[in-house]
Length: 209
Image 1: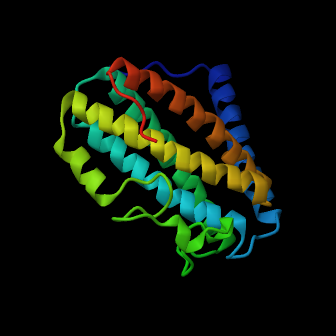
Image 2 (image 1 turned 45 degrees about the vertical axis):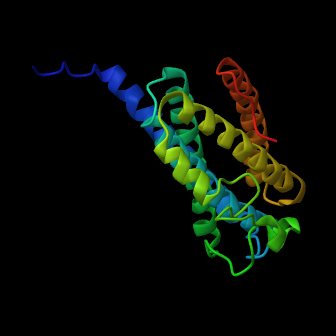
């Protein structure tokens, strides 16, 4: 069946909204380009690189648990985290492209926060809060409530590490856009930490220290 054609007025309105949106995006891009470009070893660049890596693991964990449980509450949380952090990761990598800065650094993660080698944990945990290789493998083997509890525990710890890094950017980053994103991360992830505490309690468990 053919869809009815838009009335002339409605079509004009759609085109006007589209044009306005395109202008806004273009203007935002020009505004970003007009800002001073941070140095490769700046807090802004370090935050963008490290948080992109941090977010990637959160996305991976969320997709893993989605396939290990039928619980709608956990699946909904995992979907929200995966979508939010994948989008934010794209923004962070996009900034590095815009600044024409490398996406990887020879320096250890979180050097921009004065942590350097102290940031890395054991067994593949690159930064505070990140799961180890063994924990990721275990999550991929569990099902049902066991998978839910481990995911909530790992993601709570992951968020704590993310909040710590985002707070570092709020203090040290120079580009306002990055500081605003970092501030939003702190607020959003602290809210999810509180939510996950209740979800763990409902499952007879608690967050790890």
